[in-house]
Length: 83
Image: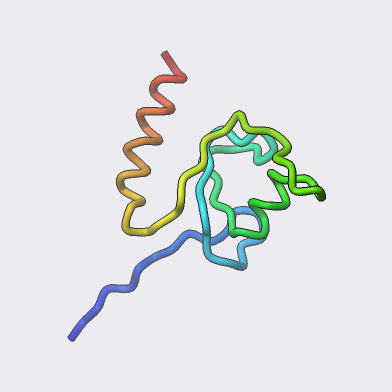
């Protein structure tokens, strides 16, 4: 039986690990959306004491099955910002 390969995004920071989450409007990332592995997400968004550094961004759990739904949300989000 043929099974299609599921394409997963890699972490946008190191391009090694599979994405754990995707963010919109993360000010330190420089672009939107950004895909993070768990380690990079923690490094970019939490300080050494475990406190969140900033929270003016949106984060979603990444799932390749949900990526088309995410693309719809992203288009709506970007459309709202352009208005």
